[in-house]
Image (cartoon, rainbow, N blue to C red; front, side, top):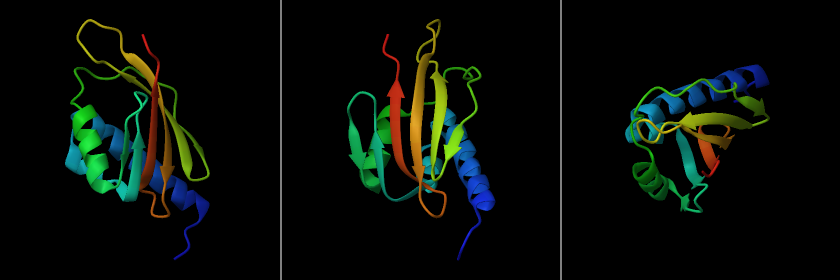
Length: 122
């Protein structure tokens, strides 16, 4: 099945929106439904998780429900099957949120197969 670039982009955008919402909720099962086969998750702290079981473990270790709503960030930038996605993550009450960016890669079905996370260190 061939998908035109407009349809593929819309599917990537939908995946990203669902992934972001699930991440804010700390909903690991929903995150895993949006991940393709043999995914790779690399964190800014140097941790690397490869394969579905390992990525799930990585999400469980790192993804927690947001303490408050995240402030506005610039819109994602899509190029080919990749996306640059900015985020601000409130880690603890009263502390300024951590600024970060993900470089995401999508498979042919617009599921995430690579999540490279980078954050600004304090």
